[in-house]
Every structure is written in structure tokens, then in C-alpha cells.
Image (cartoon, each protein chain N blue to C red):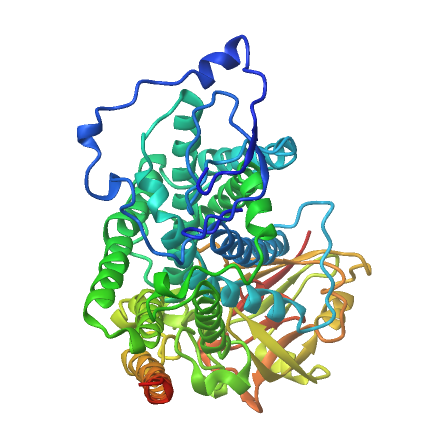
Length: 175
Length: 410
């Protein structure tokens, strides 16, 4: 397949039947669907149908409208909030952070973002109950903060290594 | 095709009703193609078929593990006639349910990275090429929505934050799991050709260094995502693996913390048994061919056995303890029940989904299954089920009925 910017395309592909193809992430047109796709579609559609049937008929199942709203809020939260923040952070990082430390900064941001997403509900502690003190017993904010701090310490170390290596390479360059 | 040189085979056009699905729809005015819709608006060299394919495979594995272990837990709690669940090894459910929660948390970075990688596809132009294309795009709402739904509700359950879920968590999470796993299968089927491309791309096929400009390469991006997933897994596993409890960040429990050295999931106060459980006139009813009522003093006078068993919550945490009490097999014999008899163990708790549980072979006759009176060398604390509770090997905690009031033959 073609690597973006490299122009190396060697494969043979089937075009879409209607000729109206989209493009892949790296640019080339999407290939035609695989002839084996129905081997995946059939069990997949059966599972989706079974899940939908269960949601609609199970005792104590969710009200469909509430289920759909929850689903839609999840999609919106990702597509309209999390993803734009991630993309924006990446753009800012590319503009503001020197190239030599950009990779450690990227990993630091990825890890920090994941820690926030995975830990926010525990940090908020809305499920804590005096009735059951052994549930949610930790200082989650502190633990997430320590985890993120350790990550940035590691990334700072990596950045230092990259700076030192970069300066050595520069020093070795002929005048 | 970028770079040229590719051979494109054009298959025969569909006919009949299928032609309607494939018929191109008019493209919107190009003046609308602005912002993220612009050609070349998305330039990160990290996005590629290989990146998307590998991340997709990892997400698929994590969701498959979650689905299989979740389905197993559901079957154990709601066993159909064809399903049997052994009482040994005693830690098997502990492993499967621990894995369920760990893999769920580990899937968070994988899913987010996968969605970031394919995010530009949300802005593809034209937005709709044909009716079939529109259906395909809409189906992605089911895929993405159900995947996010599962992870969000799972995390909220671990955080015991139920009020934000406008439905009963267990039912919604279980049935949506079928939709999520089915949507993943459909998605894999629709992307088989692209997956083949992603997997056939040489691992060394990285974008030029100038494109990366000091940032992560595709390989280091994937490594970072995998490492993040691994760290999340490790810092979740402490609620299942005591050796890791010191580094717990995303777990709900420390297995070492709680009354009598054991966590509690439901308190006597919330079960409404604070008075009935300590009532000195309380008797446990054995309701079978030889019915009888046993006081706590009589229960204590029966042969006592001590077993070391874990209590495993469906929320993934588990902890081992020493339990002392009467073998359930002895009680069933006292009731005059045959070896294959099933019984219902009922609680003083007057309402609630888990106020009773069915105890069937092999658990009912397993010598490790007790009507426990003591925990870690002391009488059961009321929050652990005083005066008597069920403890059986390899069984979800919600089926280990507390504050037992009656054992009834089915």
C-alpha cells in the first residue's frame, strides 16, 4: 500500500462497484469490500439483533429513549469534546513545543488524557457511601496525580536524553 | 491512487434493487467543504491503515475478553438448562471477573486511540456517496456508541455512580454488550480489505522523518498506546491481585481493607436487616422433607469446618478469607434431600434482586460450601451477614446470600 508522502503503491485493488470510492486514511482509494464479509456480517447482525431484542424485552430493561440518549451523549462527548481537545492539543504541541522534545510531550499528554478519562468518575467520588466504607477507599485524586506526575518525570527524563543526543549529533556535524 | 502505478479492477455494476443502493447521490456544493472537511485538513502522519488495523485488533481482543467473561458471569447468575458451572477451581470466577474489569479499563486507551486514528473519516467528502454508503456511516453510530456505552457504564459501575445511569446497569450493560460485539463483527467484515492492507504494510513503513518532525513515529505511537493500556491494566488489577493493591489507581477496592479484613458490598443497614439479624428469636428454617428450625446456638453445636475461600464481586474485586461454619451438604442431609437436590437460600432481606440464590450441584454438595457463622476467627460482622451466610467456591458474590433466613428445597 502507499505510504503517505512516499508514493510507493504496488498493490492491486478492486474498485467499488459504483466507482464512487472514498479514500483510506493515508490517501489511496478504498478497496472494494471483501467477498468474505458476509461471514462476519451474519453473526454480527444476529448479535446486534439479539442485543436489541433483549434491550426491548428484558425485565428491568432500559427505556429505549433513555438508552438512545445515553448512547448519543457518549458519541457526542467523544466526537464534539474529547476528540477536538486531543486534536487541538496535538496542533498546539506541534506549534509550541520544540521538535526535540515533542515525542515525550505527546506521550505525556496521551497518558494524562487517559488517566483523566479513566479516573474522573472515581476522583469525583459520587459513589462513596458512609454506609460501605470499604468501597472506593482510596484518595483517587492523589493517586491519579501521582501516576501523572510519574509519567511526566519519565517523559522529562526521555526529553533530556533526546536533547543530549541531539546536541551530540549537532556537535559531530562537520562545519 | 496516490503515487500511481496501481492496477484497479472495476467489477460489474450491480443490477436490480441493489443498483438503487449503489446509485451515486449528488455531491454537495464544494463551497461547503471547509474546515475539517477540506482536502488535506488532516495531516498527522501517525494515521494509517496499519495504525488503525493494529489498534482495531487490540480493541477487538479487549472487547472479546470483556464479552466472553461478562457472558460467563451472566450465565453463572442466570443459568439456562444447558449450562453448568463447576465449583473448582475455587478461584476461576475470580480470574474471569477480574479479567473482565481489567480488560475493560485497558480498552479505554485502545478505543480512544483507535477513534483518534479514524477521526478524519468523520469528515470525509462527500459526506454521502450513495444510499449504501449512508447506511454504512449510520451503522458506525451503533458501533462507536455501543463501544463507548459499554466502557462508560462499566467505569461508572466500578465508581458506584449509578444515579447518572437512567437505567438498571446490569441489564443495559449486558444487552448492549451483544450490540457492541455484533457491531464489531460487522465492522471487521466491512473493513476486511483495508485490514488486509494494514496487515500487509511492512512494519518499517514509517512516514519520512520530516513528516514526523520530532514527534512520535507510528511505531512509537502504538507502543505508547500499548504501554498506557498496560499501565491502566496494572493499576486496576490491584482489586483482584493483592500484590498489586498498593498501586491501585482505578480499582474499586483494596482486598485487605474492610470489616474483619474483608470488603463489604452491601451493608445490613441498606438491606434493612439491622434489627431482624440480631433478633435473639431468629431461627433459620430448613424447608424440605424433614423441616426444622435452627437457632444460632444449635447451628454452633453442629460440626464446624473452616475453609479458605475468596469472595468475588461482579465488580471485579475479590478477597480471600477464612470462613467457619456448617457444611451445606450436612444441612441438606438433615433436610432429607438427595444428592442432586437444588435449594434456594433466602435472606432476611425482604426485597432486592439478590435476596435469594439457587444452590445446585456441584456447589451444593461441595465440602467447601458452608453456611458460615464466623469470618477470620470471629463471629460474622452484621455487614458480612450475621448470623449466617452462604459461602461457596467459584461463585459470584451476589449469590453468596447473607443474613440467611431459610434454606428451601426446590
